[in-house]
Length: 289
Length: 104
Image (cartoon, rainbow over all chains, first blue to last red; front, side, top):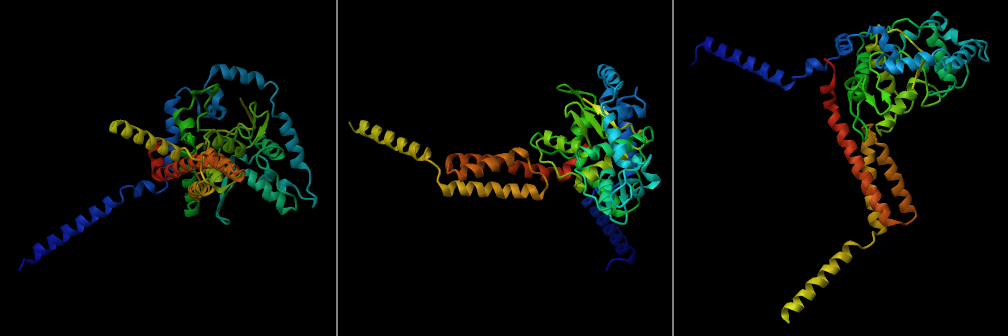
C-alpha cells in the first residue's frame, strides 16, 4: 500500500494535468471573449503608426487625407459642396410635420439636433443595434408614415441634415455591458475581417491592409473614421448615398451577394466600425470620388 | 493482314468512344446538374455567403433548361455548382480564419 502523502501527490499531479489538458483544449477561449476597449486601442494605434503625420480628425476625410492631389481637387469641389441641395431638402423634410402633426424632432433626444455621433446605439430593450436610418424609419412608422427606401433619396437627405448638425462632434458610440450588445459588436467585427465573394476580399483587405493605396483610380480610405462623412455625395453615383448604399456596393464589388439594407449583419458592421472610430469627428455629409 | 484488322478495330472503338463523349446531354442529366447546383447554392445561402456569379450561372442554367438547350443547361449548372461549392468552402474556412486578420 502506498503512503497517504504519495497518493495525495499523485492526485495533485493528475489534477494539474487535467487542468493543463482542459486549457489546451480551449487555447483561444480567452481571446474569443469580446473586449471592445482593447480592440479600439489596437485599431487606432495601428492607423496612428501607419500614418503618423495625420491627426485623428483627418481620418474623417478618408482618401483626401491620404493623397495631396485628391485633397486639392476636393478643396475646390467644396467651394460649392454637391451635397448642399440634400441638406436643404433634409432640413425641410425634418421640420415638416407628419400628417398627425408630430415631427421627427419628437422621436429623438435633443430634438434630433447634434446627435448623429451617438448612432448607431444598442437598444437594450429591443436587443438590437439601431442606426440613425432605422430610427428615422421607425419614427415615420410610429407616426403613420410609410418608411423611406434606405439607400438614397429622402433618407440620404434627412441623414445629411442631421449629420450637418453634428459636424465636428466626435463619435461617441457605447457598448453596454450586455451579452447581446457584445455579440452584435463581435458579429460586426467578424464581418469586417471575413473574406467574402468570388474575389475573396474582406472589408479589411481594402481598408486596413491597403488603406491609402490605389485601386485603379481610387485611393482606398482607411477604416478608421470611414463612416464619419456619411451620407456622401459620390461622383461615381452622381447622387447622395447612405451607409447602406456603400455597404451594398462594396459587397457587390467583391462579387458577394449583398444583404438587404438594414439587415442586422450590416447594422452590426456599422456598430463595430463606428465604435472603432470613437474620437473621430463627424464630417458628414461628405463627398467622395 | 491481321495487324491491319486490329488497327481498324481500335480506330472504330476510338471513334465510338468519342461519339459517346460528345453526345448531347439529356433533360434528365441537365435537371440533375441543376439540382446539384441548387443544393450547393442553398447551403451558401444558409451560410449567408452567396456569390453573384454563382447565382447568375444558376439563373442562366434554369433559362437554358426551360428552352430545352440541355447541353448549355448542363454546362452552366456545372459552373454554378463549382462556384457555389467554393463559396461554401470560403464561408466555412472564414468561420475561424477571420481571427488571424484582426488588428491586435
